[in-house]
Image 1 (tube, helix red, strand yellow):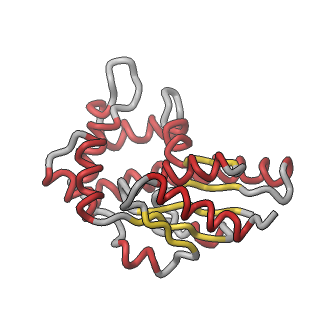
Image 2: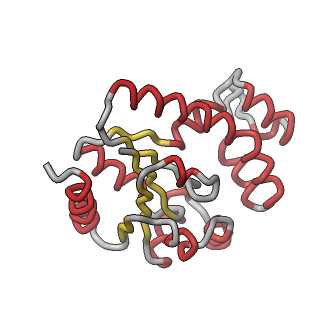
Length: 198
């Protein structure tokens, strides 16, 4: 079974992925894959530099993710350009990992942790969509603390994403991560037992 795990920014997808891992699932983190496809020397990184200029690189030639994020979150057209460059590379890498997993572990549970799962139409590639939600206040606080953002920067990043209400239409399972970690873990365990009643 393949679960597509998604949610709004700073909702706590990684915490839910960690609990699923503890329960026995294998997790593919799209953010990690995204980092790999833009490592030095890759076609994707060369294309990013050609499009956005050398200012998006650190001195050692690695991608300066913060500089790039500041560029694209302030400009919807630039964000679309970046997605057009990176998404095909990410999709190819994840498809390969999924194929290998299915061959090596028939019947096991694979979790694809993908922030933009619904935006890129990947809900069709998974058996269930698990959506992690969070109260707006909690989300804003977490995002500002985690990414060291000002309030306007955090609001800009939240506004750049598909609204939560829209995402809910695609969800088979909704996990509310506004409360304590223990509360979230119990929700994950309950839904896990429904797909793994052993």
